[in-house]
Image 1: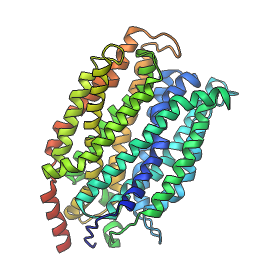
Image 2: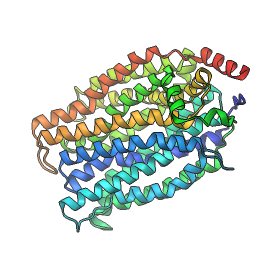
Image 3: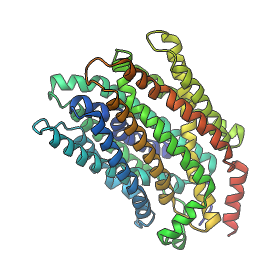
Length: 451
C-alpha cells in the first residue's frame, strides 16, 4: 500500500459531496415522510408500521456486511467502489418511487404486503449504493485533515439535499396530490427526486478517483479473519457505538418531526421552516468541524464537545414551542443543530482513519467491511428508534388526521427533543475514550509505510 496523502481539489470534493445529495433524495425522503405516508395516506395502523420498520431495517442491516465484502472484492477498471454507485443509482430511483406509490385498489392486507415488499427492496438498493459511497472516501486520500474536510463537504451537501426534500414533501406533495395525480403526490415527488439523485450519483462517479493502491493479500482474507480484525479495532468499535446511538435517536426524531408540527404545533407548514433552520445550522456546523478538529488536534475531542452541546440545547428546546416562545425556539433549534452538524460530520470523518489503524494492528484492510460494520449498527439503531416511535404512537391510540390526546402530544415532544438530547450527551461523554488524534494517526501512517 502506498501512502498517498493527496490534497483533494475543490472539484473532486464537490463531486464526492454530490453523492450525498443523491442519498438525501432517497433516504431523507424516506426517513422524513414514509412513516407519515404509511399511517395517514395508506392508512396502515402505527403498530403494523412499527413491526414493518423493525423487520425490514434489520433485514437492511444484515445486507450491509454482504455489500461491504462484495465491494471490497470488486475489481474493475472503474475501481472497487465507484461501479456500485454508477450501476446502483437507477434501481434505487425506481424502488424509491415504488415505495411511495399508493396501491389504492388493494385492501388493507394487500397494502401492507406491498409496503413490506417495496420497502425491503428499496433499503437493499440504498445499501448497495451507500456502503461503497462511504468506503470510497478512504481510497481517495490518506490525509486525515483532507478526510475531515471531505466529510464536512459531504454532510453539508447532504443537508442541502435534505432541505430540498423537506420543501418538496411539505409543499409539492399536497399540490401534486390535488392538481396533477390525485392521491399520488408522494409518488410524483419521489420520481422527481430520483431523477435528480441519479444525476448526482453519476457526477460522483465521474469526478472522483480511487488512489490508494492495496495489495490483494491485504483484502483477500476469509470473512472470519476480516471480522476478527474489525472486532479488535477499538477506535472503530467506539465509532460504531456512536453511529448506533445516532441511528436510534436521530432517526426516531426524523420520523416524528412531521407529526410534531402537524399535531403539537398545529401548523404543518412550519415543518419546512424548521427543516431550513435545522439544515442550514447543520451545514454551518459541518463546515466548522474541520477547524474545530484542527484547533483541538483531535477529531475525538471535537466530536465530544459538539455532541454535548447538541444535547444541552436540544433538552432546552423541549421546554418551548414556536407558538409560546418563537424567538427562543428558533434560536435553540439553530444552536442545537450547529453542534449536531459538527459532531455528525466528524462521526463520518473518523471512519476512514480507523481503516489505517485496523490495517496496522491486524494487517487486514477492508474499507467496505468497515463501512458496512458502522452502517449495520447505525441501521439497527434506526430500526429500534423508528419502530419504538411507531409503537409508542400505536400504544397511545394515535388518531390519523384527527385530534390527538395530551399523552400522545407529550410523547411526540419527548421523542422530538428529550430522547435525542440525552443520547447526544451520552455520545459526547463516551467518545472521550477515542484516542486516535492527529499525532497518533500520523504515527500509524508512518508505521504502515515502514511495513
